[in-house]
Amino acid sequence: MVASGDGVAETRLVFLGAPGSGKGTQAERLSGRLGVPTVSTGEMLRSAVAVQNDLGRRVAEIMGSGDLVDDATMEAVVAERLDREDARAGFILDGYPRTLVQAAALEGILADRDEELDAVILIEVPEAELVRRALARQREDDTEEVIRTRLEVYREKTEPLVRHYAELGLLHRIDGHRSIDEVTEAIGTVLAVEV
Ligand code: AMP
Image (cartoon, rainbow, N blue to C red):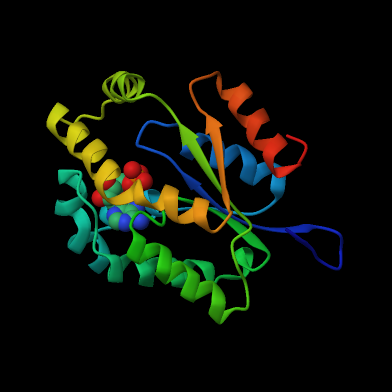
């Protein structure tokens, strides 16, 4: 993290974890403490679907199936969001990247701005607990099959990012099978920030 002129640390983070790992909740909490926005691609896509704009109409079906929206669409969505003023001094990405192609795209977006990631926080939760949580918070349109698809897609397409970021020396593993407060505290320790 680079300290900028006014003493505020610039913070560019990725939160990684399976559906139900609690990464969205933790990203929101850390965002408040660090003063940088959370960029949640899932939420951005859900709003697009709700207002039924072009993007929303294109992604609605694939989102409903539990599969991933294509990498090119996601790169455009994220590049545009990170270009906004509030993300200049940092951000927490929640739900992006989700494939190795997206990780490369993100590196490109940041390189164009002379920036790079500071850290990747992986929130780890055992599979049985993920399924339990998913069923507990099941939305109306989430069938068990969609939940299972989401977990499989995570294992197959997103988990390779763990090794990628470990090799870059950016990865921090956090035990997510604890209370929300304990997880927040563990992330704060890793990032050396007061939470
Ligand atoms: P989330 O709320 O992060 O679980 O995202 C909900 C859904 O939005 C996912 O199941 C995907 O269909 C889609 N989505 C969100 N982020 C991405 C991404 N980075 N790449 C592809 N699809 C995504």
